[in-house]
Length: 118
Image (tube, rainbow, N blue to C red; front, side, top):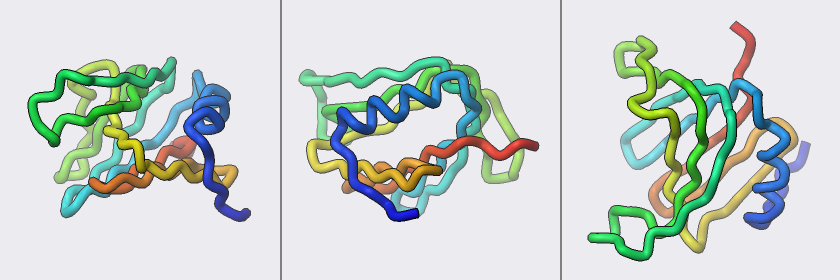
């Protein structure tokens, strides 16, 4: 299974096939790692041209659906809202290896995969 780089349009098209699936989102950002499980009901992209500072992303991917985030104590807590936001940049790399997506930004790496059955 070779990883391939995708355009944002190809990423969008492939991720649409996962609507209705339970997914796992893993974030590795600097010293911050966490995992989120959610049922992907839909997703959208946004653009915020009225940012206050560079910490707020210019672009974002919003994964929508109910879910839970794994805490540092290995407990599951409900997501604070019904979506998960991934900050995107013009330089974001989109990879796919037939089992998972990796979004690589200057801030960190986000991995989206079908959640294992538990």
